[in-house]
Length: 367
Image (cartoon, rainbow, N blue to C red; front, side, top):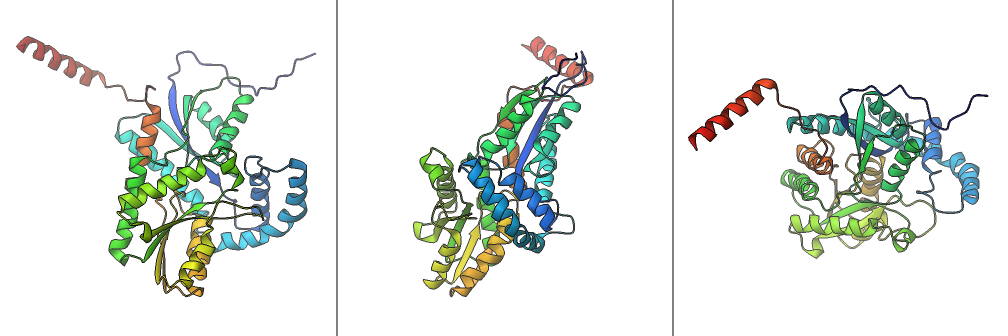
């Protein structure tokens, strides 16, 4: 009787094969299309993650399949349709472009690194991209989440997907993980430069609102550093922009369910500002590195409506970093820092090595 194995079969290891280094740039994910069917499939995967919903599994599955997946997909599909482009999902487009630019930036610095992107939920999956990288000869992989602030609901979930892939893989590449870069100087500088450009073209607001994605408040009490890292990012950004405490605020968006989430909530904050007589507000979303549903629809559309309806006069949404060269440079700095020690630099050709040797010999002769 043949013995079964929990591991997938792999091609035999090729002796003498040149090892390659790779970066897997991971984002949250997006439906394949702005339709109820595609959104239902995406939400079923996303909301089944125990990292995202931390309540008893059986109870949650009853709620998810009995209520949410019956009512939410159609509403969410309409929202996705309002921001969908001719080329597809904005989040997927920006994530793919950032990964290509990152490979180019690293190449300009002399690093021979393969960069691919993956989605935690949806396509292309983390497992499929790791399989592809292995097939291309990658023996070292840096896992780089698109989330500047660490949360168990996002960053740790990406790592879970990598570990799950590794658990069924026979020959596992050497792995490294980037937990966060919420206070990285280049990231803060990129945010500040983006805001300053907007102000140069459109003038300055009465107040700047920094809106981060929300998570349940209980995660803070259970040890998740996300709340603190968001506040540190906001403080460093305000300092970089030389804002006084009266000129900026922080809030959290995208609340799901009835449980208490991190406060203050973004939409009520915008309504309060409008009612209080704030004439112009600019909103930036530092936790999102690429524009997506939560920024283009929830903030730029719904947030605008809430502020203007409450008495505000002028609303500006400042786009995410997207393909901003200052941001890609910062992302390259983060990757390069975590690639340190791996042999990624291109080997000099024979002629360059000979010229270098001759220069060294000539210098020694002079001395």
